[in-house]
Image 1 (cartoon, protein in one colour):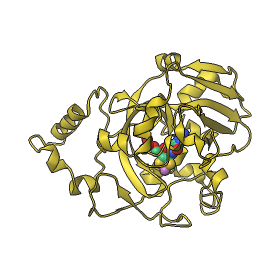
Image 2: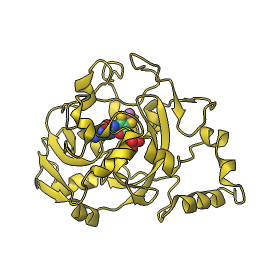
Image 3: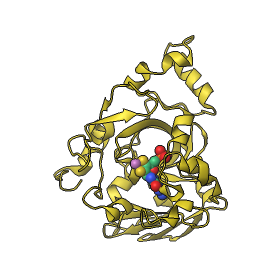
Image 4: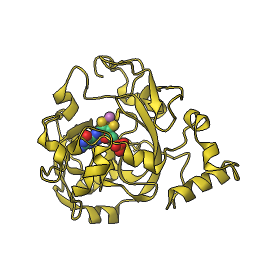
Length: 299
Ligand SMILES: Nc1nc2c(c(=O)[nH]1)N[C@H]1C(S)=C(S)[C@@H](COP(=O)(O)O)O[C@H]1N2
Ligand SMILES: [Mo]
């Protein structure tokens, strides 16, 4: 691994959002300033994390419906215990890895990442999780592997949105192997130190912070190492609008809207839009993955 990413805003033993925010205020020399004073303009311009409510009530999880409030209403029906992840394809030790066994072996840490949806809204989310590369090490990636394919849990009784052919189910995603092994790429298992809620992709979901949000596939049940580029849900649905790479790029617009700026959730009705950053602000860490690539063609 080239480097292990160091969080500039880490706070390991987070247990509670209020406590977490309180500590941040004290650390920032803001003791005595009420939460209300933190909200609004100041927060929109800096990278203050979104609230637990914002992160867990404004969701895209189409298996439960396409409205932002559907996942929090309906994801409760999803069975997440027991849970296992099948890791197969070009690996030395294929098999079903029980979630509890995975957690016993992984080092969970906090990662505060910007999160940018292709729909041009964004949040800042304090995830808890582990590096995907550590999980892949359990299975032993073989030398012929070039891509990683991911698949979401599918149970049509539990997932009312799958009655509609909005997408082909199960939801599938993919990364090039070097993207998957990058230290910024994590499997998230928590938010604000609590177990990740079902609407956010319990019990574990991918998070790739320099790509549009739809790459960060939820409730993963299968990870397959392959030698060719795997199909991805949004690309299958509309290849002209959603490419395999889907790196955040303010210079490459969506065919139907600009990607130059974004609306930070929680900023309020009159908040200014924020300029979208190349690779969502992670260019320093990831730009070299794409050296020599035409990012307009391979969008
Ligand atoms: N299985 C699955 N994963 C998914 C989605 C989905 O509909 N189904 N939506 C994607 C999109 S478009 C976004 S923006 C993020 C939203 O994650 P959040 O609800 O935790 O903010 O999840 C992504 N992962
Ligand atoms: Mo999204």
